[in-house]
Length: 326
Image 1 (cartoon, rainbow, N blue to C red):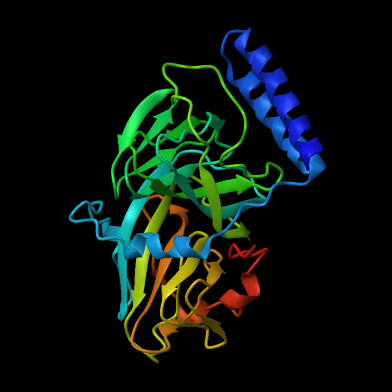
Image 2: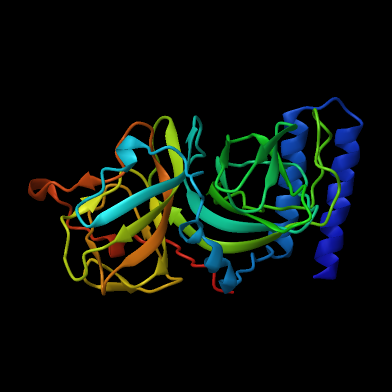
């Protein structure tokens, strides 16, 4: 592993010197990022580390004291017995081509921690779970407080910085091309555009969810993070689906999906677009973080038409699912 690390650092330094000696352009940035990714693939990609304590501070555990984003009407059309509370949403105007993964990670930034500037291989949605964070978007600092969010467009440049003396945590949702392994916090430096984070300790990244998706919206799409609660224990609600790929990470209680899959706290599940499913709480209440990407302007919850219901179940559509276990 030391040899791989040294190789990556040499590539990074070489790419940086070339970039710094030339006028800023995105092609040189992409080439440098691609070199780092190729080196990681050749030597074995570094695994993201999951710490189960991270689940204690997921969005549904946070009291935002009135800072919750304004309700999104077509996200609130929940079926009877289900509640939906949107925590973060952003419209992406460009999506990567298939094959891609939907991935959720938790980024922890210690006091004064900073990431290097990165090129987003797909749209990225950040949500501040704890503390305050400055997101540098195309070199411009954007301060975010607890409960606030920011979308980074595909091919956009971004960096993270924690300006305070307290630890901050950020939930990160991204669409990641399979041929471009997602490296949320990489050892790669880009030139200063307008401004850049001050140097500091690197962030820690924990994998929460990752799964391949089999379809994406054709036009503008909304990435979202929401809290969903199932409150009717033992009742099979009306079958429904979602118009885009949606992931679930159970936070509390036990959720029964399609009467065959039992999801407990810390378990995750992938719901592919337009595949009907049923879900209910095994006991009083089940709560999960729901995140995904759906067409802009379309409802999150779509009642299934019994006359044209698919014979596929949600369990038949799960691809390459990882819940973050080390």
